[in-house]
Image (cartoon, rainbow, N blue to C red; front, side):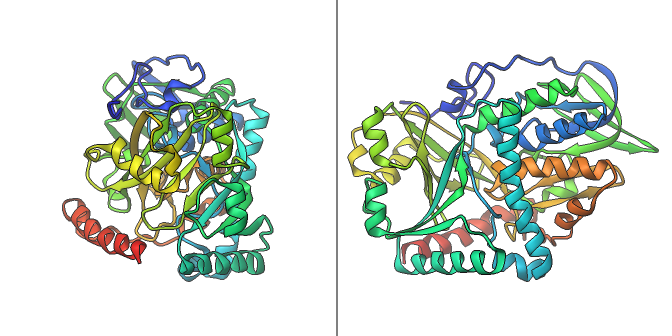
Length: 433
């Protein structure tokens, strides 16, 4: 099997997600001049959520997507919808203080509720299933899970967690790799591309106008209006919402230094059959270990194992991708050694230095949300809602996120990748200890 990082027939990156996507009609490229209240840049979950909320509030809304709706991380990710943020709550308390950390936590839980309500209210067919587990491989990691559960229960009143020990895990999963797991019944997993497409269709039904294959080349503020240009035309608007995340490129240079695109990669096995698939994860939860360079996996709706891992700080996919991830998969499930890999793909997520999300404004009328650091499935949906609230004049919740301080990555664009590669070598070594 050839690794499939290139685009498939639909215009999305070739993946199991693209192969099993719900029908989504092509949208034209922008041609000529359009006028609206708000122009949203980016057709992932954040942009589609913002467009939906804005259109429902009565704002004329145009969404510009450089390729296809869901082409970026929103349509390629591991699909695990998890509470909290890329950094833990203890770190967030140090950054913003206890009171604001509690408010941010509450909004992270709201993001899960919002995701589920949108799936229900808009009839989005994305195979959502409840249940997610963070797994410990070593005794020190088990202790981390114990402390994590205690903090979230005692300080945040979060009662959806349960610690499963090794004996129970062997009943739930056909593997001996893990010695404990923190199971959360409030988190879950879904088909991320179908969720994104469904959210975007809901935005269109609410009145948002969507253009695909319309990469934005410039955003120019002038007076009361902002002009957003593409190769085929321009949009003149009062507000701009930038939802590009890891695929921002050089569009808004002041934002670029606060995020780092990191490659992550996934494989999908051949269909395993119901009996074998159910034996791997008997309660159908999603799983992620707590190594710094982590493995994450879950079952698909058609009885495949979707297994992700590896990270890359270059723009080049790792060689022998399928073989490399297969090796990680077989460490968890040796019984899959002879199972074929039918799809492999990857993409970039944006991380921040502190792993907290980066929201804010640049100029008077340009809003952005980025740097979800691997926790984007649910939180991006809330980000779109908070931006819509801010555009409508109620910015308190958006501003709470925007007050999180963010340092630029050291070394600038030229040197940040080598610096991070050195840092990652340390964390990979720590994972082995």
